[in-house]
Amino acid sequence: MMLSEASKLQAEAIGAKLCRWSDELVYEISLLRRDGRIIHIFIDAKDGRVVGSKNQD
Image 1 (spheres, helix red, strand yellow):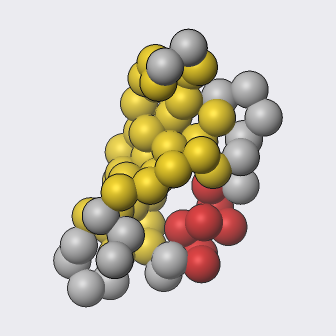
Image 2: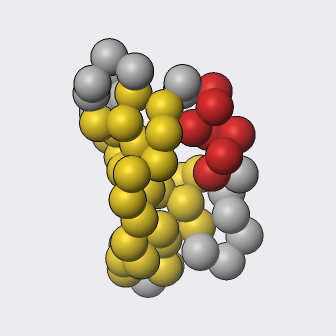
C-alpha cells in the first residue's frame, strides 16, 4: 500500500516510524515529493490501509 501511495503522490519514502494514534498503532511514513516538499501519511499497522495524511496540498 505504501508504495502505491508514494507512486500516486510522485514521492519517495525517506523515513518511517511506528506510532500510537488513539488506540491504534500506525506507521507514519515521510515522503519526499519531487518539488522538495515533505508529506506524512499514516498507515494502519494491522491492515495496511491509509488512515490519514498531512502536508499533502
